[in-house]
Length: 545
Image 1 (cartoon, rainbow, N blue to C red):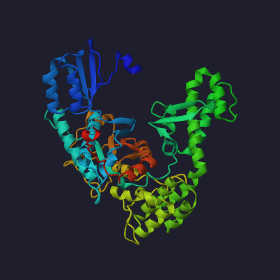
Image 2: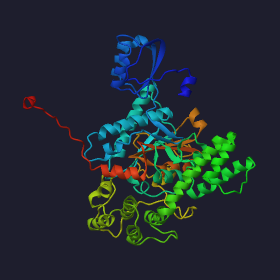
Image 3: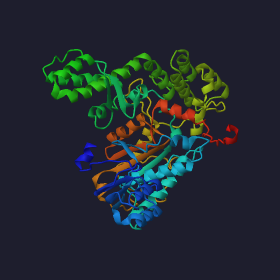
Image 4: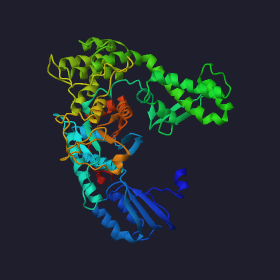
């Protein structure tokens, strides 16, 4: 609100609520291009105007019928009417979402009656994202014999992009820019949403209760405190993709540097209590120290969970996910890896995650074996946590096979990794292949009829005459990824890692919403729920007489 006040905007009100007229003031309307919004706007001016004039901004394309209705009803009061194409949330510097977790049920539930409508809505939002970035990308999708969502969405987006740029350029078609949009269904990598991650951001959102990016904790004096984990917290931005082992080393070092600068003993043991005393004596450093305190506390909370259960779980999970142990020896019998997890008193959700990783490692299991696993975990009445993955196109029950089909992965045996963090999300392979122009066109067909010849350096084929635009000269190429059904924090991290490694290509990733292991398990289970039925209650008043 303070930012708005600085721009001389003194009142912010809800469009749908009753408001007093302020005839001497101009009003800025920021709204979605829906009939409900337009009707509410017209109501402000049709009979008795509430404001001197209106400056109207829509988040997306406004249909002609709604525009004409506005024009006829109250056109003389409208000073500005613009479509600003921002029907998405810039979650982070390289991450966007559509803030629509309900899209998961609409797309994957067998009871869904609005799958097509949801995909249409996602396509509209993707177009506004591209328009905001001033990109007209070549569109590709991951081909999947079991699922058609990616192909359907790719066609919708490509058609809508074509219409959008024809409209924007007054009928003159805008040429493709040096960008690619890759669309992929969530089922292409079921492992990453389930695995225990040990990088700071992913680990925190998995193990700690963080709602709407707000971390709540108790201060040393017992007072309830909270901190917002976002781009304004520079320490969070610096540490969020680092391994927890590095984070727990880094934060105390930063604290000691600050305390040393105030003539404190740098070698003293850093605790929450010490920090509290330090902050009282250093007013000038209070904000800086507060930031460090939050992350010292958050890292400590993560490590408590790690030491209690997660460390032991991670070895089995990594072996199942990667298919080999720390020494690179292939896991020949995944059941031997899984069994200790089932016999240990881990929580039911942790056991479900391990069972899923076992099934994913085999590309499906027999119905007999699955029933035994469900009995082991004691979820006979909650088997949907496992069975419903088939609705994402993930094999769960299959016929026995000595040669289970597994997609080939990039060789990362020479990369330095932590023993309990050997798994790399599949999307990172996709990003690197796309940047190097190595994506197989049979697996990743081009939706666009004339896709831009593209690679991560921004170079084009010698056969395609391409005049570099001012945008091309400013930067290299841009790779935009959209994951249908939710994106994980580990996949978000990959976008930054690939961008940092390549430098000439910016990778942006997003989805309808961001997943945690707990949220996707709940979403998977809910796929079995039928839509709520409605009943009409008729009361015979004569019976009450």
